[in-house]
Length: 181
Image (cartoon, rainbow, N blue to C red; front, side, top):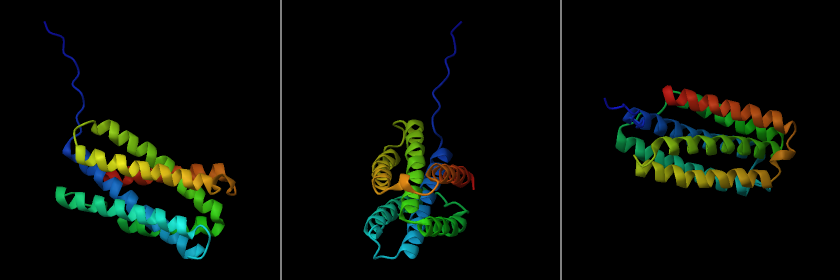
């Protein structure tokens, strides 16, 4: 009698749809966070140029995922209006705490997104080269954002470990919700 070996788990189309949905929602949320930070800090603050550059990259990521979703017939998350308000509020609140807190927000989110993208790449394997390529490219830029935020004093934010942990937890919750809703 032949022994049955477990088959490798292949992501289904629905899994890829959830990946696109959550990735697009995350990029949209990031643009809203940066918009909130710039609204509070203004465009003359020394960190404004750095924040604007990160925001432009996030917008490019969002546009790319929007196009992939349209081609593949994937609907966006129904929570997008919530992420619009919550992202802006998070950006504004962290900027109001000071530029280091704004950078702590970026460091926390990008740390979580790096892990999230790594999980997606492992799940995708070689089954969706187009999506894998986009995730890999965007992940590299998200890591640059995290490193820039750390270099710009994120760890000097008031109550950094608490702020960092709370934002990462919120990011995980947003990921989980956006996959399903």
